[in-house]
Length: 480
Image (tube, rainbow, N blue to C red; front, side, top):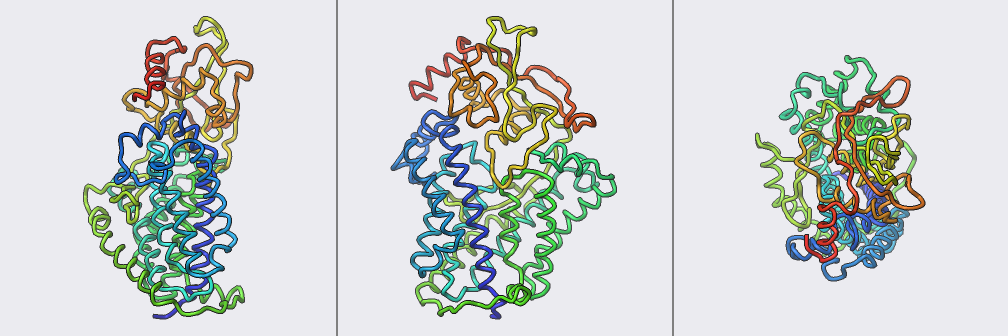
């Protein structure tokens, strides 16, 4: 089979994946312990008592605890940096395969015990793409076409799955009005989101058509001969770039863009930048056999994702095995039409009345203060901020367990939890009471957001509240 400059495609895939792994392990380093650590909002130690290793493979079943979470997240950051610099792929097949396998196994260990805070589709996407990277081979070995084409197969499933879930889902994808709402109601807007929201309706309709082109029409052409495959990939990358600049979607679109590099024509790229292929030796027979084994494994494991892809009851972002090897994907099958936000406030006063001096907790990424311009955080992932967006969705049945734990930690003045927030309005001592107000947010004219109070999401509570006392006692006793 024609090489198509696979050596340069391999470099792009490896460096891109290393960057995404770095974002993932940095998030684990700074967020996993306050979220899922021994004293976190959803402690993984309780989860591992209930879910056996075979159902959630993780090194932390053997080495649990905050010290292990810290050590292995640092190790993940270190390995990611080595891969980003190309060091892991400069010393032969064994070093390359071991390095990429460790990155995959370490990240799998965090995902499988991360519970709600790791229940995002891009976790499985990183694990599937990361497992394929084990077989890309080092820079001194000829690349195999099989793995590059498995990345094309992954790119097809990600993009086409997203297109199918949309066209089957919300009517606004069919009447071309989804972008009239999306930029304002997306999980975490960025500084350009308001500008995109105010584009004319005709531009929004054109944007939806562009979405359908990129996700429904172009993906089959990823398997076409060059230059057709490269052209389809280039348009898809432009589409993904438009999403990246218009919102904060963690590394979802960044990682998808990396995977969509696989159909590009590496020979054309090398010619354009005057690059010369480095000296490479043929693959060892054992490595070639392993590559074919991977190819067969993915082919066999693709049956369920393909059936789901063409099912009328299509589900999105689902793994069919605990190793997240071949998954099904899809995003934004439905669009929220109004934005709601939960604003958590505290007071030091003895009486928690309306006239008390309430001060708001500001999050790092999610909207709060109406005058604050949304920051750029992607491809980094602010997990608590994302969960607050889900918590604020209309129709939620009660408060999530992690939200109750968050309120308790704020009342306790827990330093680790407070580091997840932008600022602590009570630096001297924790508040006596916490409440949560429920607002409807819209992009404003004079200030960044206009907001309208809808009601109370959580009535004022203190640590003496009977429910909070019960939760704290069960938490201390290890009973969920």
